[in-house]
Structure formats: structure tokens, C-alpha cells
Image 1 (tube, rainbow, N blue to C red):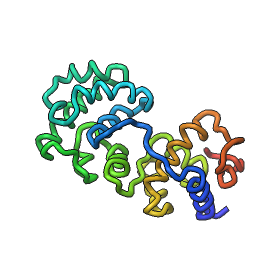
Image 2: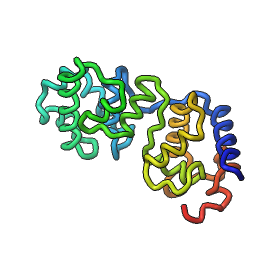
Image 3: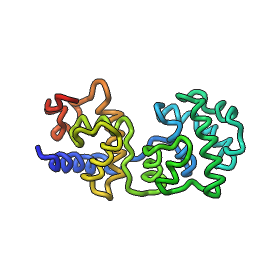
Length: 215
């Protein structure tokens, strides 16, 4: 199967069966999303969604969080993974948003990545979800699924996966495709025992075809 045929089949199936898809992180504002994405690193969205309502009720904007002690932020997020580091990151990014961006979450990639605790994936999520721009954030699900089904090849880093996906997915579908791959990886193409028998994109999948000897 040619690579473009694989992309065409996968995209057509998702467009028909999952025409609308979005983040499972609850948020009402760009700042709320930024906080949630930072907290979601190596943590489930379900856990983050349990934590953010009280956290954001107490600190609804960067100014409120910037004025808080790291210890107080920690008290709200101590049930997530790596709470000490994330409390420091949230404090630092809130202060930088206040000091450098007049209290508004910046929209540009380089500005976002300049915030404490914000890497390329988080910045891409903000681009795609908060600001409606074409972007392909690569988390563990996107990385695994893209390699397993054969959308990318010899891609050993998230950036390599991102570049290959961006080169083959139409720009207007890029952010939606990010959600397709995440949700597929979360519920169907799971890490240990992918549910191939009930997978709609199996006809275009290297793993299902038994051709993924190195995956």
C-alpha cells in the first residue's frame, strides 16, 4: 500500500465516523486550557479534570495565580503527577504572562514555549485548541498510533512524527486529526493490547496487516 493511500483511507474513515472531535480537558479560557495541559503531562485527563475546577476557581487568571505562593498552588494539585514541579511551573508561567504579556496568554509558538513548563507539545495544543490554528501536537498517543499504523516511518522523536504528519495531512484538517489520533490511541489503539478486531482503520494499518515487524 502506498503511503498516500494509507493517509487517504485513514482520513476518510475518521471524517465519516468522527466528524467532530476535541480535547477531553475541561476549560473555559485559554489560561484554563494552558493550566490543564501543563497538569496533564504524564497524568490522565480524568485526574486533571478533577483538580482544575477548584484550582481555577481560586486562581481564575494569570494575575491571581502569579500572586499566590507556590505552596498554595501545590495544595490544589497535589493529586496529579509531579505536583512540586508543576506548581513551580504554574507559578512561573503566570508571573511571566503578567509581566511580559499584560496578563493575556500569548498566541505565538515562540512566546508560548518561553513560558515555564511549556514545551512544543503544549504550545501546539494551545495553537490548535485555544487559538484555532493549524497545528499537530504529538503526545504519547499520537506518537504511538502514527508509528504503529504506518503514517510515519523511522520517526523516533515527537518532532519527527509532527513533521511527517504535517507533510501529509491537509492543513485544514490538521488540528482535528490531532484529536482523531489521540482518541484512537486512548480508546482503540491502546498501548499494550490494541483492539484491532473492532478498529475501523484496520484496512489501512500496518499493525493489523502484520507488516510492522519493527513496531
